[in-house]
Length: 237
Image (cartoon, rainbow, N blue to C red):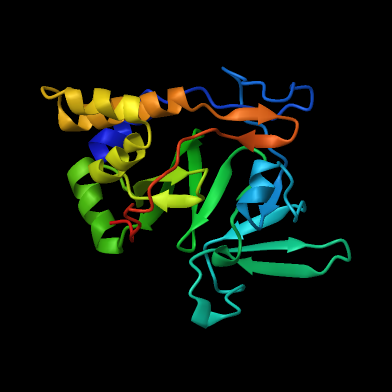
């Protein structure tokens, strides 16, 4: 799984852009995603570039000051001040996602996953730092000659824009996407002597090439074939 996603990222298609000057149904290639900063309460706000909470905000992963509802078990919370100056706090599970002015993050299982590739099938990545213990620091200092204070772990998942679903990037799920296009699937099944991971990433790329996102003044749209409901959605490893 990690091999297929890592290779896929190197072959990612150009990210698209919102443009008020774009003609309707115009497919824009080789441009940069530019979204309004703010918090999205649902996917429609993201697709139309219209966050319902357009204020400056802060993302907190230290919950000492903002853990208002312990039963909700949010890993992250977001705080902002409204027009009246009142402090508002939202748990990550209460929102769809947000744009910090540079990147788009989609909330999944209480954590912000960065959208590192935008397409009919997008790629989301969650990165978390793990601080080493004092013993680990001492061992690192002894073995490497310097202190290593933290480690980073990342988790990649697929996001299907048309159905608003986060999908685990297994070979079975990728095959289910491809099955929606009979011509592409026939080509996929005809190839027998190709590395399994390489084959899946190549055809996932072909799927995104065949169904590019359409960017217009009204937002993001995609014309894809019907997608099966028989996809595996589960807790990332």
